[in-house]
Image (cartoon, rainbow, N blue to C red; front, side, top):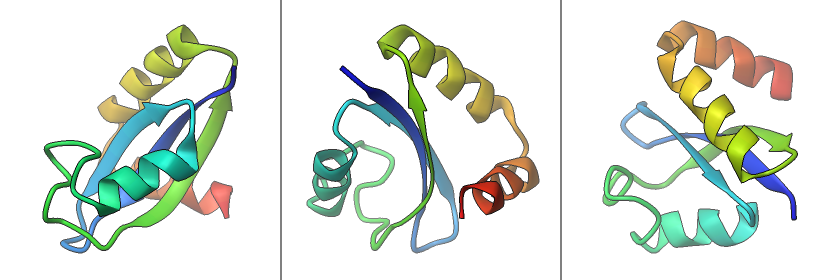
Length: 82
């Protein structure tokens, strides 16, 4: 099973980083207000970054690294995604 770490840009300009094993389903959940407490009411969202990981453990580790990055570094990472 593939896992992904992803970054959403919220309507208010904030960034949300998360993991999932089904990116399309997770984005739909965010849009319905059921994806995460943080994103509730902050839509619409733009998927600005996604990275495939080998398993859940590696996705969690990568998520932790990304969450420690400064906002500018996250945006730079998203530019490499596009």
